Structures are given as C-alpha cells and as structure tokens.
Amino acid sequence: MIRLEKIDVTFKQDKKEIKAVRDVSLEVKKGEIFGIVGYSGAGKSTLVRVINLLQRPTNGEVKVRGTSLTKLNSKELREERKNIGMIFQHFNLMNQRTIYDNVDFSLKYSKLSKAARQKKVLDLLKLVGLEDKVTAYPNQLSGGQKQRVAIARALVNDPEILLCDEATSALDPKTTAQILELLKELNEKLNLTIVLITHEMQVVKNICHRVAVMEDGKVIEEKRTIELFSNPEKELSQDFIKTATHIDQALETILNHQVLSSLAVDEELVELSYVGNQTAEPLIADLYSKFQVKTNILYGNIEIIQDTPIGHLIVNLKGNSTQRSKALSYLETQQVKVKTIKQTKEKQIISLVEGGF
Ligand SMILES: Nc1ncnc2c1ncn2[C@@H]1O[C@H](COP(=O)(O)OP(=O)(O)OP(=O)(O)O)[C@@H](O)[C@H]1O
Image 1 (cartoon, rainbow, N blue to C red):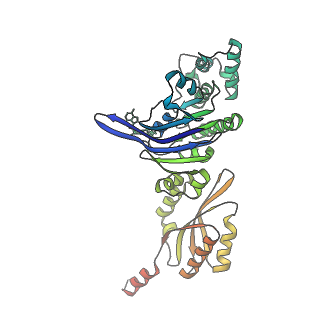
Image 2: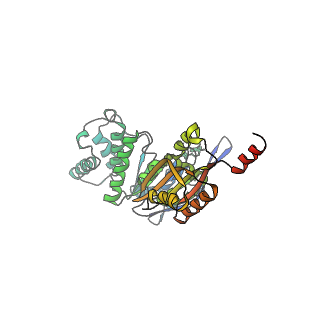
C-alpha cells in the first residue's frame, strides 16, 4: 500500500543542515497497523508527513498503491491525497464550527448530493460514537471526543490509509485506550491501513502489527511487534520495551531496596523472559526438584501481544554456584531468556575473608 524508498529529508536553517530523515526505506501492507516509534526529534513526524507529501523528501521515492507521488502534478496529488486521511496530536478542529460542520467541511469539493453528503457525515459521526454531539462545538467536547471528530473528518473521503501523528499523546491513559480501540475497530471494519507515530511503546503494544524504531533520522530496527517485544536487538528498542513492561521501574525499586537488593553469597538476581504459552511456575518448580535451587519471584509481568503471552520475571535464585549455573542453563534449554542482574562473586568474598575482613 505504501512504499518509501531511500527517503532523505534535510532542512536548511541558518546555513545549518538538519538531516531529519536519513535513507529510510519502508513498506506498509494493505490493512496493516504500522507503528513508528522514537524519542522526540527522531524524525517521526517528518517521515509520516512524507507519506502524503505534506513534506517533500529531499531524496527518494514515495509510492502509494504503486503511484509515485513525487511525480504527480498538484491536481493529481490532491486527488491521491483523498485516499490518505490524517489525524494530529492537537486535533486541528475549527472551533467556530459545529461538529457536523467540521466533518462536512472536508466534503466541500465532493460531488455527492446534499442528502448523500448529510448521510455520510451523520454515518461517520455515528461510527466514531458521537451521534449525540452533532450540534456541539469543539470546546464543548473532551480531548477524546475531539479526536473522534478528527477521525470522522479524516475518513470523509473513504481513504484506504489513515496517518496518525501522535494522535493519543495529548490524552489520558483511559481515553488513549478508547481511541486505540476505535482505530483497531476501523482497521478491521474498513480494512483501513494505519500508520501511527508515537513515543509510547504502550501504544505500539496495544495495536500495531509491525513497528519501526527510529533514532536520529534512521530506522534502526523494524519487525513484527511480537518479535520486537520478545527479541529487541538495539539498545534503544530494549529501552522502549522496558518502559512498556514496567520492568525498569521494578528493577529500580528492587535495586534501591536494601532487603531486596542485598544478596547472600549463594544468591543471584536474574531477569527471565519467555514467549508463548508456557508459564513460569512449572519451570520454577523444576529448578528446585532438579537442581535444589530456590526461586523467589520479586516481580512478574505478562503482556499479551497479538494473542501471544510474553512474560518477564525478576527472581532471586538461591543455591550454590554450580547448581545455579545448571539451573540457568536448563532454563535456556526451555527457551527462557536469562539475564543476570546482580550476583555476589564468591571468590571476592573468599579473598576478602582471607584478607582479614
Ligand atoms: N520545518 C523544519 N525546519 C527545520 N528543522 C525541522 C523542521 N521540521 C523538523 N525539523 C527538525 O527535524 C528533526 C526531526 O523532527 P521531527 O518533528 O520529525 O521529529 P519527531 O520524532 O517527530 O519529534 P517530535 O515527536 O518531538 O515531533 C528535529 O531536529 C527537528 O528540529
């Protein structure tokens, strides 16, 4: 549906060049929800605006349904853009007009009859759950409701593509979840292709099928969401995942907590992660029966991403170092990823004791 080929965007500012997007190639398939995630300044907004040529690339090709947008004249481009709706963080509604008029405005050049046009607007407002707000004004609506109006407006020309530029960033978590649910519904009902940019991995986790991670204008990792969550390769991706699974907060709490973080010589603090339907309990029971290693779970979290559970645990393993090492190897044979967070080196302690401490 969308193909970006070797896109560069360079801005010139006070004789300085800012390379906002560097050599990005991406493909988004029809009916897909594709996420672009990155910190502020990574180039996400610039890249998403390239898709409908709100931002012309300095180099590279933008193809939508096989058509090269950069080669179209302005009339052809206007026509092609009808196929691409867009919503923004701050909704961009016209405050002096009613909700009905805000949606209807985008049909200004449509060839629909008056009755068909009216039906279209009312149907869309119903689709986004605002049939009772037809005569209200934007400042009488909540943030979530305003975004619903913006979604209705973006869909008025029956586009196949919806671009979402930080569409939930101004909303509280509950409203964010409701808007994401609506986007998911529209994706399924209308087979709408959605490209969504965000700095929140939580958003990606909830609805994206695939995701690209951007840093410094480049796409540094791109894969299915489940794969990114189960096997993030780049450090930045790992950081993002930690914020979505809350494992970073858990670790901080544990490491700052004297009782939790102080380890005896036969203990080890370990992070375990696993994907799929296995649960941790039988494995943990195995660690005791097979290797006499006792496991104390300090934190546990299971995310369901596209119907697949992904588990993260922080555990304290207690046993002698040979037993612990065998237990960890065993976990790895069971497709559990193991990362030691903290251990007390026995040798160090022995040498301190021998040294008279
Ligand atoms: N019109 C412009 N002129 C000059 N520089 C720009 C322009 N638009 C964006 N930039 C710069 O390009 C870089 C990428 O900005 P962009 O807005 O695409 O990033 P982003 O990842 O969307 O960040 P944010 O979420 O904060 O908007 C930044 O350094 C920004 O300052």
